[in-house]
Image (tube, rainbow, N blue to C red; front, top):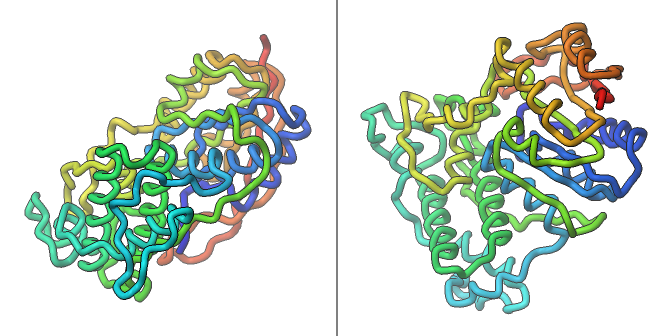
Length: 359
């Protein structure tokens, strides 16, 4: 299935980079302050820009760290004593440390833990809800085993921070490929689809080269709160367009990213997510959220992605942004995000608002 993310700019990242190149030269500093799946941040790095990427979601933080900060696998020098060979096979050689860690993750003994209890049909949720079907019983145990293994490596300082992010990234990708969902994690499917019944498998990440490996920063936090600490030549903003909160729709991946065991609430087993509530999903609060970023960041040029499905219309966005400076907009069609059980709908219009702020 891959990592499907609401509002991902994978399909139109070329359009975005083309616009940025018109506005600032390669080598400039670009703030990607709601980086999501990291698609834009990666292309910025590959095109020679220095990236400052932020997101309130922990999963986005780890995924973007891996995409932007790594162009080859880290050495995993401290993991040798923790590795488990495949039955009947020797461990892979020491210089292939990352590959050996992936081999171990695929061979861990199954563990009946939090994910098995809360998110598999064999478990018994603590809130007495009926058993949930996000993962098969076996795959939920594989997730529990991997979580425990990664926690142990981190607790015993066997891995570096970037190696930890890489393993969290790989667990998110493996779990997402085995999840019994339509597209997001708002709820599980009533019957297991064939893909979700396949054994969960860890696959080594393929790293992309290009651009500098130095000076990039990836930060976990609210864009509105971080804006005053950021100085950039251009700020790219890709906010949520609709009322759907990312924290609720990706709650299970967020639990993997945080490595915790929160209370699983209600029939869907949502984690408490109000600490990651986005004001950009509120018609009442969205303008104030934009204003805090635009007025507080040390930046003159802003490029904002938005959509015809957004809470604000194109005309409302132009009217609002004009109070800060010169505004123009470019628009083009894009495929609409849809779940497996949704009928295909017509394309949506994607907008790129350019704002040159009055300084």
